[in-house]
Image (cartoon, rainbow, N blue to C red; front, side, top):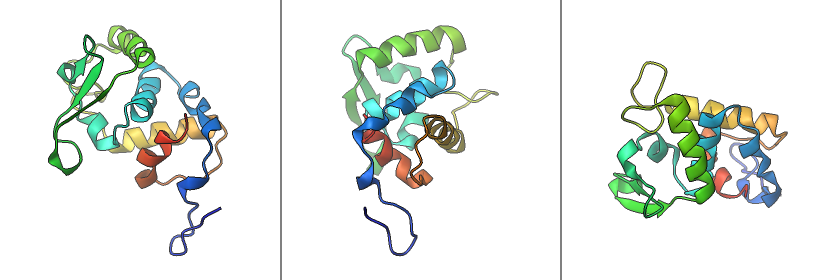
Amino acid sequence: MYVNSTSGYILLSILSNGHSSIIQAANNIKYKCVVSLLNSAGLKRGELINLKLSDIDSERMVINVIQGKGNKDRLTILSTSVLKDLKIYFKEWNPQIYLFEGMRGGKYSLQSVNQIIKKAAKKAKIKKILQPICYDIFLQYIY
């Protein structure tokens, strides 16, 4: 077990691969898509909330990340299971511009993404200390 001496938070290297239940613990299809994309596509939270509908390329099974970390554009994979969930999400929520939009339109907030992850982790009975800055790394290790 590794503990950060300055903050006292448990480092993520101790998380095991048995925590994939966080995806099933998401409350609805929108939340499931958020958590699944962060995990399977390796997206950062900031990249996720900036995704537009046009960034999803279902024919080539890729996601276009525009101006991601370091203001760089890149492609990442789109898994078939996430694509199936996204199709359900599109029908149910009907986003207009951004892939994930807030209640009044516009892009989703980082705080909302943080809350989704916290609630899903709690429901999945993951007891590790999670801080928002660690979510991006955490979700890459739960599968």
